[in-house]
Each structure stands twice: as structure tokens, then as C-alpha cells.
Length: 220
Image 1 (cartoon, rainbow, N blue to C red):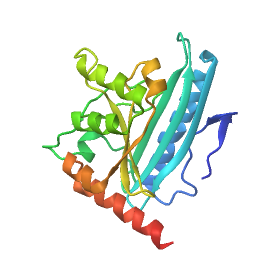
Image 2: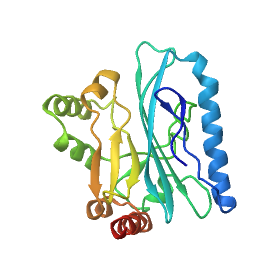
Image 3: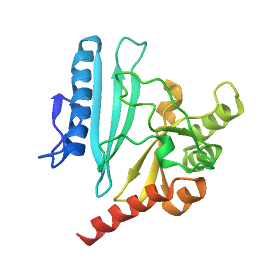
Image 4: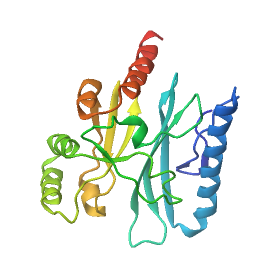
């Protein structure tokens, strides 16, 4: 379905239009529950902006990407970044153990799941190789900040949200564990080509699904 808004500047998680099977209905129930949680949390929030886009729509995965900011009883607004990736055959959310090979350089880092970031434990990963990619793509101010974070063992590792992008045929990562000021300087998303993602240890089945979806887009 098209993305609808819960209120101005706050997108709802979009549902599958006319679900055809139990798996798709399961996905819709999950997304409905997240939208309900958002509505219930709104009275506690001074501000909540969220834009949602579909970064992959079959044939194997449904990937939804949300970004914006949230201000719910904290000192300042916080960045809002979330990615939900469902397996269309089962209706299950993917997690790090699904998208990474067992011997991958990248590590899946489970984090506490809170209402504002649904299933935040599912797609949070870390790897020095990702840090190097982010630093290489960063602006000068961001580069300096990231290098300082890497030198500070108390703040390492940098954690990343990750999602597939069928249109660009790549895996996209974005840092989500930075401080507020660091995030303002370092909000870059880094697209990882499939060949590089394969070297990092992303599962072959995951990468093949992205490439399949990309080819379907190109053929349209």
C-alpha cells in the first residue's frame, strides 16, 4: 500500500495491499502492531518526524527503511533510523544470523528493543571494515570525529543499521550508535556493492536475492 501518515511528517509503516497468504498477513499484523505502538507513544513526545520508503519489494524480501528524528522526554531530539526486512515466504523478520555467514568479519550485535525503534535488535551490526568505509566516504569534520571514536575503546564498536537496496543493487549501512553531535556531522549512508559485501561475509542467499530484485527492476 502507499505510505500513509499517522500525523503530519510522521509516516506509518505501510501494509501489504490485499495480502495473498498467511505470511503476508503475518507481516501486516507485525506492521499494524508497530503503528499502534507509535500512536500510543505519541503523547509522550514533543516531536516525531519519520519518513518511510520501500527499498526492496520482492521477490524474496520486503525491506522498509525509516529515517527522521524523535524527541520524547530527552534533552534534545535524537535521530531516528530503523530498517525492517521481512522474508516474504514466512513473514519472519530477518536478523543478523540470517544475513551473515558464520565466519563473517561483520558481527551481529543484538541491542535492546524499544518501542521507538521496532525490532532494533534485528539489523544492527559492527565491523572495523565498515568503519573504514564510512571514514573514507565521510566529510572532513565527520572523518575526524569517527577517527576519535575508533581510538576510544569505551565507545567502540560503531554500530550500523543495514538494509538491502534493490534499485541500487547494494547493501546499505548507516551508523546508529553515535552521539547526537557526532550524528549531526556523520549522517552518511554507505552503499556497499554486492561484490564487496560478499567479501565482508554477507550471506550469499541474501546477496543473490538483492541482485534478483535489481534485475527485475531493470527489466521493467
